[in-house]
Amino acid sequence: MKTLLSTRKLKSAVVFISLLAAFLLALLLVGHIVATVTYRGLAVVASNFPRIFFDIPAVPGVREVGGVGPHLLGTALLVTIAFSIGVPISLLAAIFTAESLKPWERKLGKMTRLMTHMLIEFPTIVVGLSVYGIMSALTPYMKTLIPGFKPFSLLSGAVALFLVSVPYMYAQIEDGLKSIPQHVREAVYSLGAGRLLTSYILLKYLKSTVYAALSIGLARMVSETAALFFTAFGSDVYPLFDIQMLFRPIGSLTLAVYYFGLTGYENWVDLSWAASFILFVLSLVLFIASRLLLRGR
Image 1 (cartoon, rainbow, N blue to C red):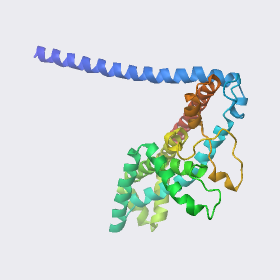
Image 2: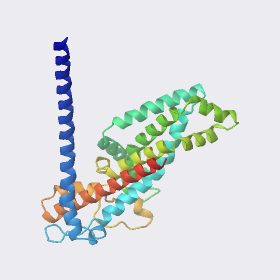
Image 3: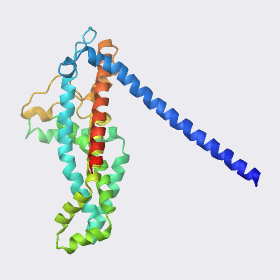
Image 4: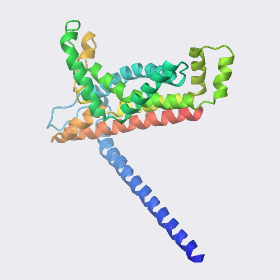
């Protein structure tokens, strides 16, 4: 008996030490990334403040760094358009699949749920390539209506971000609706409320879940890179605010980090570190804001 207890204690100690070592290793790696980005990026931002937020990138190979103003604005435009399209579609799709009543609605809801969860597993670069392929196929036809239509554009980038983020928002909201006790749903219907009003009441019941879903979707949009390679494409100049703005390439912070970091020019590499730090701070602010909203609920 004592031998058995000793063996169990030994196994428990080994498992505990292994888990602790894995946790510390993961924490060390994350801490190293955060520390490196903060140290390298903050130095560039501080030495070029506030021009770093408004200027365009400097000429490669000179001492000046310039700024990431066009990429900040491009990120804001891409995320605003994609978020404006994605939120209502995610909400309506989640309501439809979670509150299906008729047999054909349930079948369609199952197919929608299956396709959405499959889309979550897709590599985002495949999503970007698919959007580029569709836009390229539509270009000859769309040019007759919109002369400046191009597959590399703000519109293509926004569509790619929309496709990347919607499955996450949809899945969170649908799971939340399904978790509501059935007696709550029946109580609302018993008062004579229709499906639309019932869904609205249930969403208010799930404010925390909705906020979390929207926060996840927004974070995916802000931090996405691969889906923008063949869609937004990137640009180092400020976009012109005219009718054709949707159909021209546009920059983003994630693309700036990638493209500037690959160059051999020291000032552009420094600019990549600055963009990385700004992106890190932006993501951190979004995370803290979402946690505060959830805490208030």
